[in-house]
Image (cartoon, rainbow, N blue to C red; front, side, top):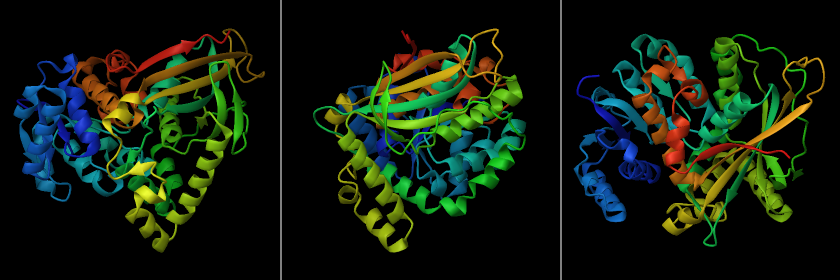
Amino acid sequence: MGSRYDIVVYGATGFTGSYIVRAIATSSLFKGKTVAVAGRSESKLRATLDEIVKDIGVAEVSKYPLIIADSSDEKSLAEMAKQAKVIINAVGPYRLHGESVVRAAVENGANHVDVSGEPAFLEKMEMNYAEQARENGVYVVGACGWDSIPCDLGTDFLKRNFDGTLGYVETFVSNHRGPSGYSFNAGTYQTLILGIASMKKDNLGKLRRSIMPNRLPEAMYKAPKRGTLWKVKETALEGWALPFLGSDKSIVQRSQYYDYHVNGKKPVPISTYFSLGSFFWALLVTGWVTLFALLCLFRPTRKILQAYPDQCSFYMFKNSGPTKQQMAEASFQYFFFGNGWADGEKVDEQKPTKRAGAVCRGPDPGYIGTAACVVSAALSLLEDKERLPRQGGVYTTASAFRETRIFEYLKSFGITYEMIDEK
């Protein structure tokens, strides 16, 4: 790719973008790599880099070259893409600003990763650009943040380490706040509102039939049906579970489709849950999510939600985002409990007889963890070309990175995967 920068961080002045720059600057894995930052405003880019230098003490950051690019100016995006081996795109909501960046990357020979958790955007990118990306030999990998690297790679990790044939998986997110509490940045909140409001227009069923036209074999045994709120009694995890409505399930479904049709492996259905320690908090969160989703559907109430994120979310989301102290104290655990059959048993002809679990652990999921995930994905594209799928294209994280050293890269940032001893 000539004299391109190894990494261009697009949206470096945003809350997530600035943490992506920090992750790159403080990692020895990026030593010797060329890095540039991109965004709409030169003065804001300079101010962000100065602030990062002050925060982490890495003077080299102030020398990162600046690229002026704007999602509404396709020419500027093309110029940015021509200068990048890998674009890390941190400008959301992606349904509003993402496609023009993907198009510029694919047309101008740059690989593209993002931290989107928006199924409609991710699946539309596969429908619109998979063929062109394949022809141009570039890789577009969406959902490389906390949505959905822990879940997508975790399901694949359990599947590959299951001693036999894995039948189905139940996953549980367990986030931990420290004494200082925690508030997500309001950008995530605005993306949620847009996603819920646009569900009918998104026509996900039609999108999915387009990118996954061939049927999967019907699973004879699936995870048990659960209530809206139910008690989890696992040795490694106890608490109250409610359905997790993030993009994880849709990403894993695409990975399992790929694994079946390309690698001939049995697809694994999953059910995703959010786990909270107390029934009281689980009840409150369930009530808030239900009311929030309802209010997103009507324009007048949606405008109120958009105008007052702090108050309408009871400060779960704030324009200022979490403090450094809150991020330092936060962590996550992502559990995977799978059922299947031992080697030699007749798969799907009898009830699953075997059980195994895995867990992914890491730091603050919102920003430190998300930055770690996406820069590990970018490293895999740079360092492990021979371990990627043979052809370019639009991929999920497990489909693109399962043979790479991404688990090593993630571990260097404190994100680990391990099997759980069920005994």
